[in-house]
Length: 611
Image (cartoon, rainbow, N blue to C red; front, side, top):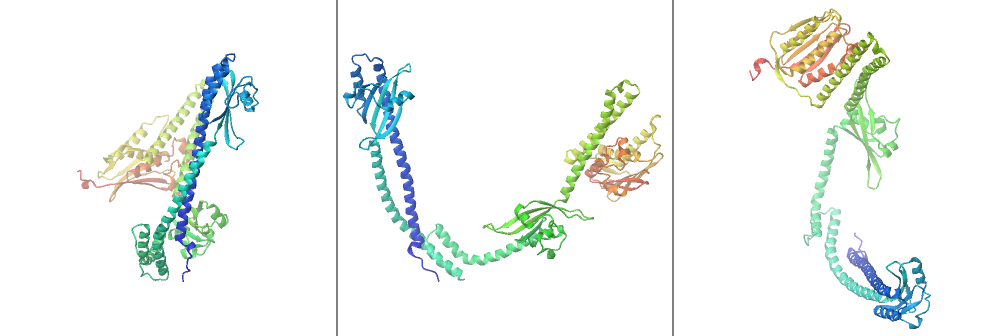
């Protein structure tokens, strides 16, 4: 049963009180501001008027005070004082530079006497106007102004002392304030009457809505609230009428949202873990379970510190207070897994912490890329430093006098030139890789007879071997060709494919012993052509095979550098082949030789539409 509300507790009474209170506050603020501004304005106007009149009087007195020996000296001063003192001026005195009163409008007997006014002395000392208010014998406010009379040359000729009745200004302000107060009382009475009607119009539908809400709380949704208008209260009444039917819909919607949330958590690409306020796992989605390699059933109820394996480094309080982003390593011997954990609090509006949410992002690939970037920068620095150090040594030797030796100087210069050429080749290769990485390197594709292209490359190497100098004999390699007899036409960039084949042939020659055989094959499969180059060289250890196409990787670093290699040729070859949609790989047996394979997509000649 609902407790009966007393009148002074009802919203009806409170609305009236609020209306009246607001009116009083507004009127007080407006009145205070209005009266304050009016008083300030009227007083300022009064003072400005007195000051202006005093300055005008001083201007008229200036020529008179310059000639104190004039027969009409006192008459002229008294005439000006009399004209000046007609409005709001209670007392005016003219004092010469010797402090004698030479004119007044109050008591003629004081003329010729020495002035004892301290304000005159103060004005004489500071050399400018002195102003101050003071109450007279009847407690009326008086405004006093003492102004020096200054000649055109800047010399003080005398002083004007003026006392004006400013009480009349405050009397006018009091009259206006009284009028404003009476108007405020009338406005308050009218406001109370209007507030009673307004509050009744507001509280009546609210009372009916209260009754309907009580019925709904008791489970009765059959009642309807009467709608009195289309205003906010009318809309509220309509909303309450719809509430009973929407409660059931809201419950069904809540259940559907819960199922959707479960679905979202189950299909998120990031792992999500939620805990209670004690750090025990209450929710873990499938992704988090896979990333952490733990079953959902076992994870629920365990501490999040144990699940994330950070119990030796963090406490639950530290996670709650700092909410740091953590990098978690869950790598195994067979699988590399690096996770980034982001934490946020589950917090109520009161500030009570009811749990913790951890979102896990798989950053394994990002970490791998970052590690490769660091290795790349380190390799570039090292590869450039080696020739630069060598060049510096030779140049220092030349600078110390070796250039005078006809036998040593040419050799030193030749080494310097070789190192310079090697750095230029390295930087060129780096620029080519950079353009391919950024997608700025364009490929001019055309249909090329791959048989003729490969033969062209091999012919050049045959000629190079045959044209070797006697002083620099080339190892007598034997290049064997095993080509399919059918012409194979492939859409490639001829210049870049020649660069790839040159790189592979150069590697075969560099790492093959004298008298070795290099076997070059070209064959056709169902939907691709395969090029292979087999040498009888040193071979590549099994552990190094996955890295031969990495930038700056060398199996035998000392030998590669002595032959002028940059360690980028195979990396460029891999990029070019992949840009053509193909694959490149290596098969090798240590100390027996290596075979490089290149596979390119191929459409048989008969099926080409342009034929």
